[in-house]
Length: 221
Image (cartoon, rainbow, N blue to C red; front, side):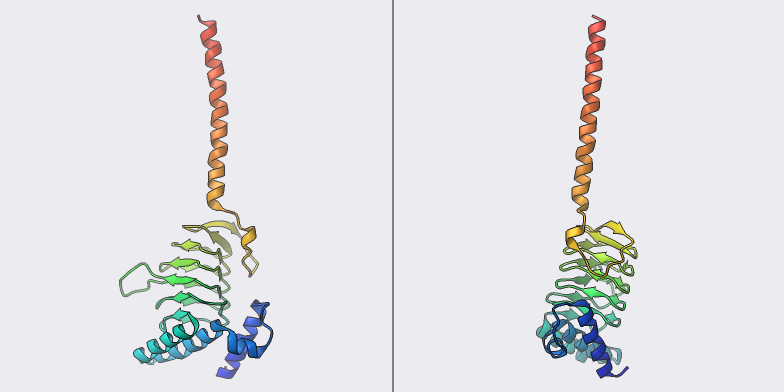
């Protein structure tokens, strides 16, 4: 595919995923996610050819221009959409599959200082909500969804939704490409609710035992 053809594909991707897009010219001129990915392609090409400093300088220019920091060593697939994008950070050994959507404030970061794979792999079709932090060299499965501001520190299976700090699975067999935060359950609230329900049951059982003990003591006086 030619570079012009690639740009057209990226513009079509934005129209498919952002209802605010009104014209191709607007997308080309006003979408920082598009600018960041295009500049990343150049930086990644330079990095692959051994021009490490030029690659980093290009990525720094993209960061200055868009507020999105993508290390030129990262691997990014086709039709990746970064919506708004401010504050997005993608580390050197991160890998992103085709058709992934990232919202602003997402971090694909590492937790190791060793020179090895230390950033996550995001498989095709995954959606990562605003402000989410995905930290470590594990895999987020295909078509998984990560809720806004979640902190993910372990593998996420395909076709699941995770939310919370640390993130926990709240639903499986997800087929929607969008992330409906108003419909996501709160795992911590559910856990507290379960504890409260159990305490109520235990209190009832204690009351029954207390009554029986009182009856027993009355009979044996």
